[in-house]
Length: 181
Image (cartoon, rainbow, N blue to C red; front, side, top):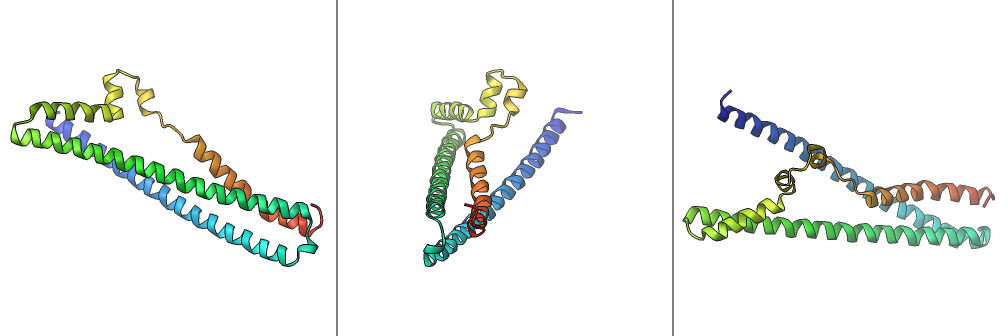
């Protein structure tokens, strides 16, 4: 197989894998959008419970009122924290992409005009440094280390807390109605 054919096959395979990854990321985004709707519906549910409880305050224990208010505070805090972290993450990604675009433009100008060669070389070096995969390859890191997927444990922690709260509130409400709390 000639060199040009190998390059074309590698390019096609990369584009296929990148497209699959893009589709999975879009699915993930849709899941988180749906989960945001679940969180907002849950907050509405808690609001309804609070309205019922405060309308009939004498029928509910003080412990239940405190637990309900704590849950409401924690859920608003978690929602605000997630919005803030999302903002930081997207701002950071936008800044990185802006820098990559400017560096690529500098390299492009240097190549097209056959001037500013030093700028083009520096831009190329910075683009390589910015590309984590290529940088790891230059550092001769193992393939296992290069392909390792770093999981975001903090996001998982917040996700689990949301699930516990979403499942816990109706259970606590039922226990209060049944007089077990």
